[in-house]
Image (tube, rainbow, N blue to C red; front, side):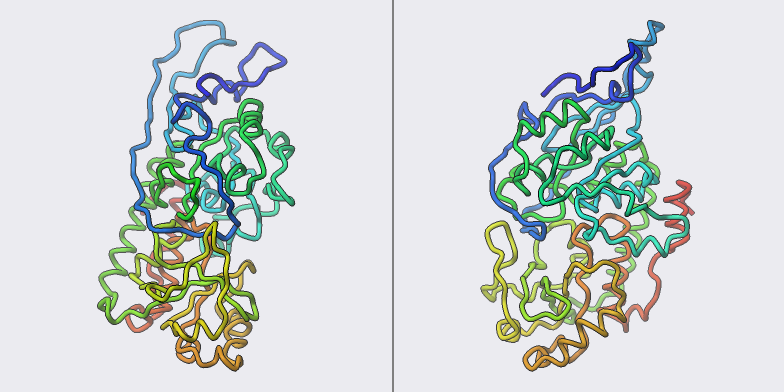
Length: 411
């Protein structure tokens, strides 16, 4: 897959696509370590440790005077991320097609929300947190939804993005909608791929490097050349984590939690284990919440296990708290209590759960959690689980965060 990914132009002048090229590719192909396997949109992570690496940024020599149709820009750079390998850029992509919402949130955080072209499914992109950040928004309705009873290739041609910010295994192995020839077609005729499925760690086909939330965020910052914004948000994250962890009760005094998928009037639950290093659970790890299903024999949702449990099984576990994930977008805490929690309190078996009786039933948060999501989630669960320690405080400065996003200014 080494070589140029330019398209044929009707003129002799170079197009933007001419400035986006592939460099060395891990394993010598677009897909490295492809092993097959089924998956569903709600699969979650296991426990492998996240590997880290430093993004590569390589300036090229300034081009000498030459025919402008063949001249290259003065500064080029490259970004390396498995499974694709290294992608070289001669300028920052102006239009970017992500797949999962965690990567959309990264681009918004880095001040490049206007570059976002796509989302695989709108209902999985939670945007209510932007309402608390002055000047920060995204046109969700304007994004191309890539999922439509499959993943057709036509929208990729219609978007004509400069970069597909998505793991190439998403359409082939996660959804099994494409084969390698489809990937090569879109790569060669439209734009490169770069990305890594980070939200979970249970896929058999994901036998290449995993990235933590901030590892992936750092690489996206390299793509759009926003190191200062990345560092400023990383600083806010680290400050928040330090503040929260300094005020947490001792580990033995923290409740355990059962993370599950459930409907608005739940009668059965799909376990979505709290343990593991998927990026969508980073905020739970910050709080040191123990997995209530540990040692119970209840397995979590994975590519090979989509089983459910009922109230009776949940009562046998009787977790200290419940984290319910469901797919309705933007429900407030009050709305959640009036619908989901109220239903459980009236349920003949569910009402006996300790978590229900003590009011420790919470929304489970977004599946695809980006860096802005993450800050709000850490605060939400710190204040929800430990009100005596945090007393409903706002634990990070919204104005400071909004200035970083909209102006690139920290402070």
